[in-house]
Image (cartoon, rainbow, N blue to C red):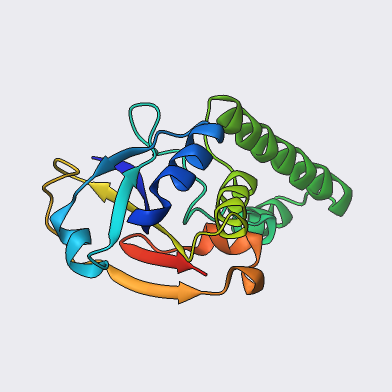
Amino acid sequence: MCIFITVIAKASDKELVSDILINAGCRAEVIDNPSLGKRISEDEIQFISTTGHCNCDTVLGYEPDSSSDKFAANIKKLKRKKWSQAKIDRYIVDQEKTAEKKENQKLARGGDSVEMWADIISTALDGGAQKLGLFFRMYSGLIVSENFEPTVRTVKFKDFEKREFRELKENEICYFR
């Protein structure tokens, strides 16, 4: 089971979107998943963007744990152990540095980034594309034949905050206009 990202665009924007994906270091292979095909227009095409084995390291739909959420339970335990506030603060800083280092290592391994997806979408829309869709799913079978029921949502890219890429939902086609 692996996550794969599909980019959806008008067929008339095929060359534009393909070039943008390739320039961003992504793959731009046209596929035809019937489940997605039922939810998109007949004049739209699907690109698989995966360059490696999968997109399991994607930032899409992945919100890193915030320090307050992640450490709340640990802080209570440390206080019960009579740790000083200064020692707890150092512990939190160390944990945040470790999390940031892991995130940077993930990006260095060729993972995507919020900035990469924002650039792909803004370049496509600025280049004349009417809309661009992003879809990601944890597939258990073949990408081109797995059955599922995707949902659809449309947003205005100019109103979309970069952090919201991390809040995208699996199995939801998110169109950007």
